Image (cartoon, rainbow, N blue to C red; front, side):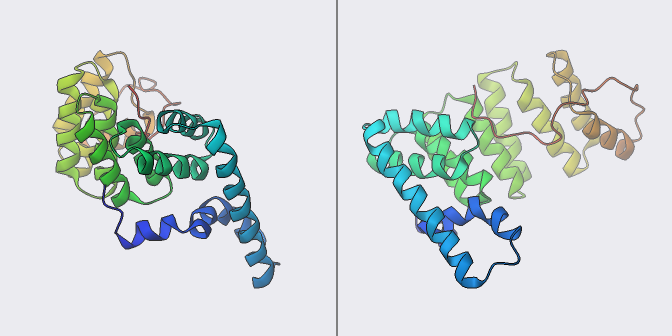
Length: 232
């Protein structure tokens, strides 16, 4: 994975990375002076550095560090997970799961192009992981590279033909491209596999395509956009 892009270098600055997790707190404190905000950033940075130091002993190997990072990721501690995945990659550059985790956390922090690089490294190292191909496809979709995203979803389906999430993601891409027939084919395939797309999406697809959808058919609880999950 290339680490030389300007935005990635910004992400590697401890203060900048920590600001990702603290920016919402800062936005809620308009009464604070610049000096007080600077102290808050330093405190957040120091806490993250202490956390990293403690984890050096808890996870002595790259594999253990990547597993620990995944636990933080599941707890939505994205910044801490990112820093541990990054360290795991530095310690063992061929650790595929660390690259995949790095991609997920980078995507969640808004570094889409860098997430793409991380996912590409993961699938080069472990090309038989359909979940990582779908994650790469989602980052490509977010970057506006719709045809490239479709290619990743198709590769994932070659490995796992019953991967409903890949079909749903394809439906979203085809909708964005205005190919409503293909979008409905993907939705129908997703349903054949026992998964209902979110109602908000199928309603928009029905509106744009002119197709009538039965009320209550879709799942109102499902997320509208596919989520980076990293599994299976």
